[in-house]
Image (cartoon, rainbow, N blue to C red):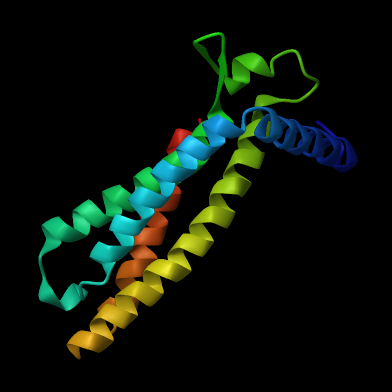
Length: 160
């Protein structure tokens, strides 16, 4: 079992590796960011429809769009492109003195920070749309929280 200080050191090494990769491979990060913001924009646009209107197909699509934005957020941290080849991050870091568990822990931290920001925006979009329609209720708060949990769960599946 690792000591707490050693685990923190490994986590800092992983974050340092990510910062270095972001500087070196900024084009890949930019492309994933554009995709992320497109999915996020359309997901938030659909979240402006009040839940009380009851079209659950649109709500399923909004969950899918927002989950895809989380996957696009995590994607550059999960794969590395080298010479037209895509290599998984675990394969790339297998020679580093860090464990797979710590890599996943850092990825989940990135996901959590992204999903909290996204959850706040989604909640505000839902409340704004419901206020415009005059249909503010409990479901307008519960639904964005449910969406946030779905996005967090799907993102956690992606970090494995």
